[in-house]
Length: 327
Image (cartoon, one colour):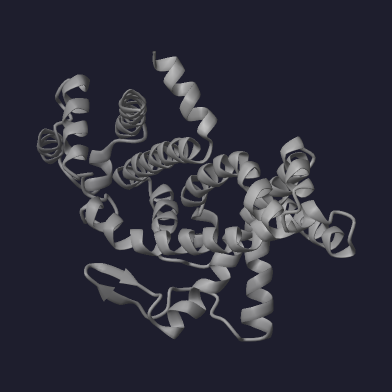
């Protein structure tokens, strides 16, 4: 088990170094940072002084080592556009994205898993057919189309929910949250529903297909023959074994939600990391783009690590196979 954790950690470090190198290349091949930081009227002496201050005259290897060292100390440079530390900007925007992604994931799990179990058990009922049809629509429609439709219905036509912004936020121990105010909850409903629909449909269909396969297994037939109640058979035995592929998808999708929440945050003007990244791309703000890449990579690696641990916790066969492999 310890060898497994060490191996996974080493793989994560290597992956982060590769992403850090790609991020470092952005500074060298996507425009000249000096042009973005000084005005058009700056003299050659001013430009040279700026290059010396940024260390751009050093060798590429030394620049990369300094870049990695700064990242390890939480320093991502100064935003070209906003002229503020990127680390501060990320800390200000991170709570909005985390709350949006967590609520979207919760909605997708709470609705997607029970509906997937129901449609797997009673696949010929009219309700199951209706749910599967709606899930197909949810998978097919682009996220920005869903967001615009929700804004038109609930904001423009009905006037029930705001179409942009985060509402009133409260600072709790350095974490700005909108979940402690009514306007904050009203503001997060439409973005969370928009972001969760695709994941919900995906989880529903995956749970259904896994349940269809598991409920035909011999151990399920044996559990029924023992006279166990249907809920115990379906939720206590079948669902537990059907969750293995679902956990993988959920883990990868949480990372995907964080990485690609840029569309939802842009549609709803949600002040999170995705919206910050879109603005950085628009103005070629390389320090923010590089920091965003590193942050997303770190999240993906961490989530995959947690998924591997969940595999070992849920399926005892994997623990046994790993012990045999380690001998």
